[in-house]
Image (cartoon, rainbow, N blue to C red; front, side):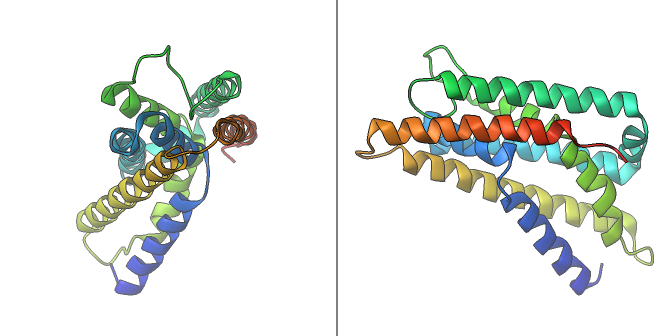
Length: 206
């Protein structure tokens, strides 16, 4: 892979991950309600889902999923339902960040699983890797090394940025922040998740 191609891939991936979306909201909310350290588990879950999609795209399976309207629709509507569920839970909760629990602190595994489900059920991620990944492949160079490099870079970017979102959420709820601000953040997160669910419902494979 040429340096210019790698640079373009790196910048594109960073910009896509930085853009606020369902995963970013979930990461920040996990940090707000569970702390920055534990929210890293959620970031790892998001990154893991993207690694799966990356692998599917690299092997050409993603293109088959996109071509199958039935499989694509199942993935899409599962994602829509889950985002709406999270959004309603956030709107109805009285304090804290995105709270999907019954009072007990969430385990690292549950945070990881939530992050994985949110990202894996997002057809936008599948479309991104299926459509964008081939653009950065140099057919004149060994394919396996290009995929390993891009996959590793994607994993590191996901972990760094979503962990940063978790840290941001944690910092926003520290100190003497008034309860009404926390409630406002919570309602905003819930609204954003509902909107993300709406936008996801309008995504098509074509």
